[in-house]
Amino acid sequence: MWIVEKKVGIFVHYLTSSNKFQPGIEKAHKFVSKEMAETMAKTRGGVVRQL
Image (cartoon, rainbow, N blue to C red; front, top):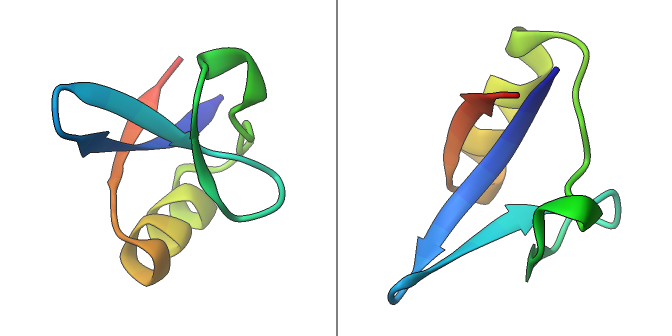
């Protein structure tokens, strides 16, 4: 599983299924493929991380 995260100040926010960055890894949208996560990271800004 892959997630997209973005550093906001000293905090890390995660891309949710509603395509918004919010704190809390439990809200993070989990991508099955790395390619899909990388596409979302490019369009929304952020980096891909494996769970």
